[in-house]
Amino acid sequence: MKIPVLRIANLVAKIPVIQGGMAVRISMAPLAAAVAEEGGIGIIAGSGLSVEELRTEIREARRRTTGIIGVNIMFAVREFAQLVHAAFDEKIDLLVSGAGFSRDMFTWGKEKGIPVVPIVSSAKLAKLSEKLGAAAVIVEGVEAGGHLGTDRSIHDILPEVIAAVSIPVIAAGGVIDGQGVAEMLKMGANGVQMGTRFALSEESGAALAWKTEMLKATDEDIVIVHSPVGLPGRGIRNPFTKALDEKVDLKPTKCMGCLKQCEGNFCIMSRLIKAQTGDVQEGLIFSGANVAKIKEVLSVHQIFEDIKKGILGVKEESV
Image 1 (tube, rainbow, N blue to C red):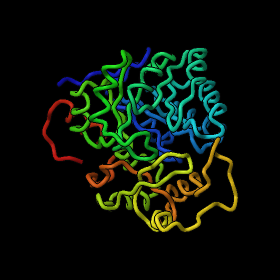
Image 2 (cartoon, helix red, strand yellow):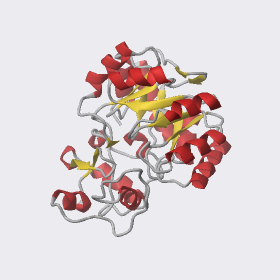
Image 3 (cartoon, rainbow, N blue to C red):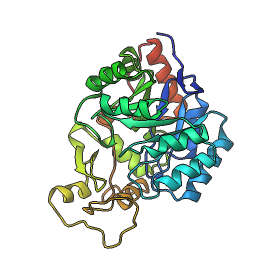
């Protein structure tokens, strides 16, 4: 298999890989720029950032690369509209959004001439997205890390979405190496989104303790928690998730007001920040289903070398 390009509207990525937008402060300018420099699409996670912080990260990424830089903003965050408009003002290359669905973002994108790419988990939502003006869709299966919109495998959903729409389809969920990318492309995907593999990169914004905990994780350490966002989320077992299982009262005493609607069972932003800054006991460590197969932290360049070998069919031990 040759390495196909990924076309989204007028954008052309030389390597058909999008790096996942992992909040909070994991997918920042250094990671996004490194991915873009390798020919993929780098994504800054806007959720959990202030408008000014997001502007700063976009400008820093632009300083580091002339490649494709996008922003991922969860629809569930209270400042969704303000963050999207700030990203558009900074002339990002594309907007990715999940954890809910905004019809308005397609109108805003059309007005600014910026492609909008929603994260969907069904052919029905993919078709609606295309009708509303999506430039592409990211199809996320149950194997993904973080918030989950389905209990079905990407292997089941992907063919349905490809058959339902004519826009580019990007597969996401559980892909951690070049062989996995090649498998999704052979199934008909136009591109692949990878999150956990890039979270365990040298350029990732996660603390060393966070990365160490991820590398130690086994399949038995994977848990599903009920997020205040109203969706299940996949992460790594630790004292915090154990307390959730045991119905310990973890309701926050202070509300940051970060979500439009919050179920209040715990504070999602504070727990993600705890983990990202190194408190792996009390923080929430989001993870994809196949994290146990990742054995080491690699540079973004090394990850892309493996991706290219996988697509080209070069046999190599999984990373």
